[in-house]
Image 1 (tube, rainbow, N blue to C red):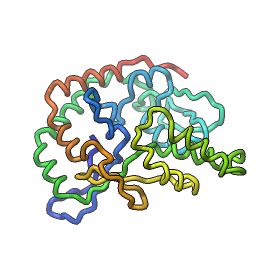
Image 2 (image 1 turned 180 degrees about the horizontal axis):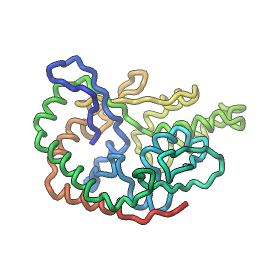
Image 3 (image 1 turned 45 degrees about the vertical axis):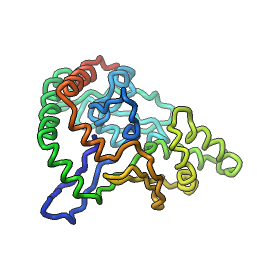
Image 4 (image 1 turned 90 degrees about the horizontal axis):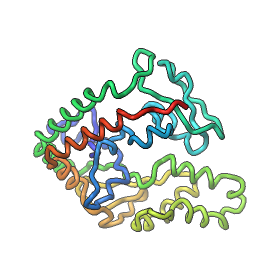
Length: 269
């Protein structure tokens, strides 16, 4: 789930500002077989991502994601605490980023039990306080998470294409082809088409399109406060409520995913 995050959420101070975490694209998926998991938390990568050598540690991703549209990030000194990032066009997009402790790389499988215990403890505490959390959220209709239709790095990629001389010299003629390739790609949800006019207006001015939602609404809003009614299948509040209602079998499935993710063999690169 996407938790509201704040340094001081207080029921005694209803005017306190709440800064919620971004709601990502998978919020939209309501297929019966879809289940939000530890992989949607951003804490662990799926085994396939790790095995092929393309994955990053959370630290490296945070440092480099804004540059990924323009250059290939390459970690140097990543066997020490003095990790640095170098950006080179054409550099092989492969990294070797083990978790590090006291400057030495460690195999993450050593910490499977720690992660499992921590995840379990947090989940059960949230589940025990399910009713209180839902009640608190209901009383804070001002919670307004950003909704990420496409990643910031992806928007930067499109802007980079737009400002390239081959495109910018004849932008009116070439922009439709960019829209078809990058915004109308196969697999994008049909409802995303209603957002394209706003997205294009932002991208053409080298701005990142911004969207947000409200905790108890199915509508989506863009940065110009235009509303897209019934955009989501459920409200964020309903989704959070459903998440906390899961039984112990859900927790066991998460244990399995944690073990799979942390027990893979990393490729040196």
